[in-house]
Image 1 (tube, rainbow over the protein chains, first blue to last red):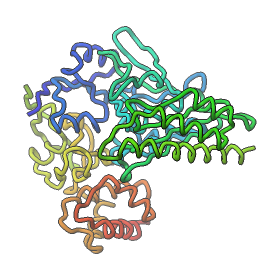
Image 2: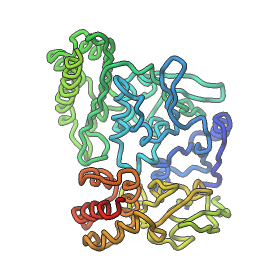
Image 3: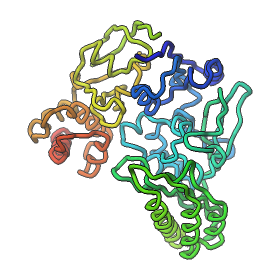
Image 4: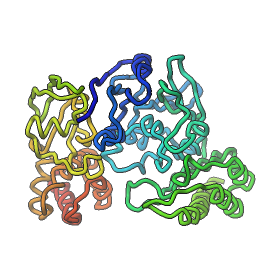
Length: 290
Length: 156
């Protein structure tokens, strides 16, 4: 029998933060889409006394353009909406592709971007995509809002930069740039968590790479990202040699688990192949655009 | 501790009053309080799809949805099948797409929502659309046939 005594439904972020701060991190939990939290409650892995449902907070819903042309994806935006968002194009398409690979259509109809990244499963699809796109995470707490780059948000296995009493309110993206964003996942069956995944976001102008973001998921405590690999791909214009070297660097830096999905050695072995394939596809598109 | 509280749910186009604890899932409310046992409790983890119902015309896992979050929303279970879901029931029967039947309500409601959005799906689109619904009799082929058949006969 669950200990849950209260299900709050605040209408504002400030009220949600106030309710959350009244707990100690275990006793009060935020409920987003339920796809993970309610499953964990059913399995008796967590037993909160109070839940704060975010379903009634209008500010957390939907995707909108910012004054600078960037995009703000509210924390309660469902994976289905993100997967169908036409403005996530060019270099930002990495996020749309990652959303489309999460679980299955029904779970994509429930799960939210805020819930997914706050849980921070390193084998999930959004973390490497956000890191590749160099997105920022907007966080609310008792002292107001702050932003954290996605590259600093994911800190360890299931651990984020969120302090006790804080919540994710949105994911922020720079104005979508022409280019290519792609997300590739190797998994046992459709919709499973990744054995390994590769997120790539390339912005280009006049046939030259302006920005490259490459991240690997499922191969360590947090999305694997190396500034050195990004720089190599940019200066090497997505060439074969640069792709090979970037894949080797990432495989060497990986810290994969041995689990039911694959051995650590297997994961290290597939990383370079997946990186080379993603880069080759981006290169082909860049050349076609010239 | 978890006290039951009054809750009004709109299920299959009718109002129902019940008592539910804050942590009770929609699946518990439907099956144990209201007797809509068409929604099945398979894994209780959102993985199998047997509990899938429609909430405001969209498929959700009843086992991952809290009952009190559903006040004021339109819930449809297999007992309230209408339109595409009814056409699918007939097509499943004709195609022999039912073996033990445990996955069938979730399959039909998931497929009904898919046909609303994609009235003429390809076989691959049907497979992708039903990828979150497991059939442990492994009768997928006839299930895909049945959905395609319903799409053919049900389309205007």
